[in-house]
Image (cartoon, rainbow, N blue to C red):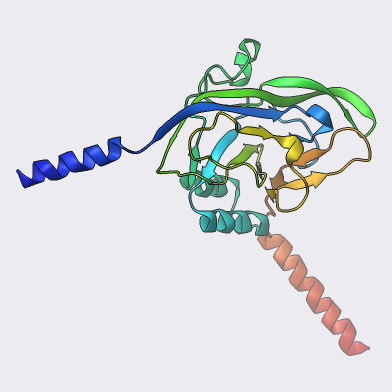
Length: 238
């Protein structure tokens, strides 16, 4: 009897937790000459590439994963596993975010993706670039995530990863109706957790993904060792 009462109490407590449903607006199409996301060398990210929107539940683990990736001690797949283990997607109820004519690029009806193209002027050259724009409908999150939690936008493509956020991107106390994630509020510095900012004198700037530093091979280590010995001998003779 006591056990049944305890279970009932737990269920009632869980049911009383607020669960909010609203819409998040995503703007990453270079509007108002804002930046758009590219590879580390400025190449467009393929349409259909997944865009992650949500919050990291462990910022220490996030920091460690970023440091390991940028230092070369963790490869691409290991870093993705580390990031996924501490990330909660807010866009679990995405409704047809991808365009119908992009089904061949892996667009999912339940995930946010790079879903369209835009004509952008980049460093004096105007051309069509792959971007994203739209909204995530019926986003659910509960007090298990909480209010005033940082919201991040990140993506992984072709062995590279980029993580971005603006200080105003936070979960509100009641719902997400007024939350707009617009890349034009991103600037170089603390807004870029992983990646870089390419600032052009005119037109649209770029938020570039970061690539891992490859660990030195045994051959390169041997070459460095031989070079060191040669340098030491030359120094002794002199």
